[in-house]
Image 1: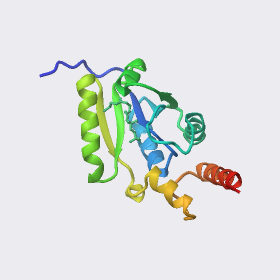
Image 2 (image 1 turned 180 degrees about the vertical axis):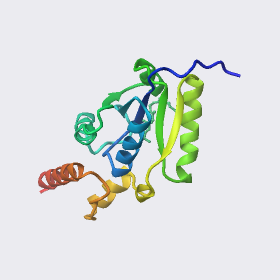
Image 3 (image 1 turned 90 degrees about the vertical axis):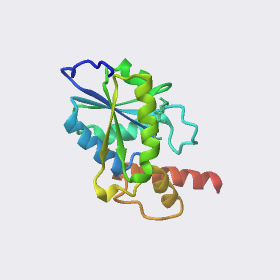
Image 4 (image 1 turned 120 degrees about the vertical axis):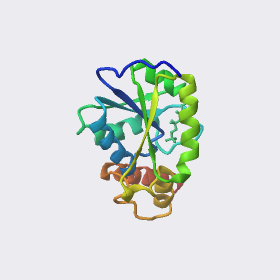
Length: 174
Ligand code: PNS
């Protein structure tokens, strides 16, 4: 059996993701995580292969705007291996959300790979409120891009930024 160290006096968790953009499902998880851990660091992946709608700086701003109400939540970004980023912050937990069984396979693979890379870091899964279980950043962007209503799916400040972004691209296209 792997010999693991005892619980640290203060538990720091990393909540990693693309957050392009943050949804109310993410926010629900952040709120739950902030009650469980001494410190929760929301970490945005910098070099994602996906073509993002919002740059890392803008995503950082959007996240900070909505998490400032939780004093033990911080926002940063990272490049490279997630477990190295976690270790650099003395984090012992990776927090991930599971919406439906379809998320499970990918999440299991990542959790086991991360455990292999750094056995001292534990992945913890939490379920967002069922109201948000169908929401994903990808669908929010798709629905909004096609003129659908996204209110209630993302924080109002994010909705405003999406509006700005789409108006800008329409102007460019005009
Ligand atoms: O919100 P996402 O896009 O599902 O988040 C995926 C994320 C950022 C958690 C994942 O891609 C990641 O951890 N990337 C960092 C690179 C890494 O450590 N890869 C090995 C982990 S299996």
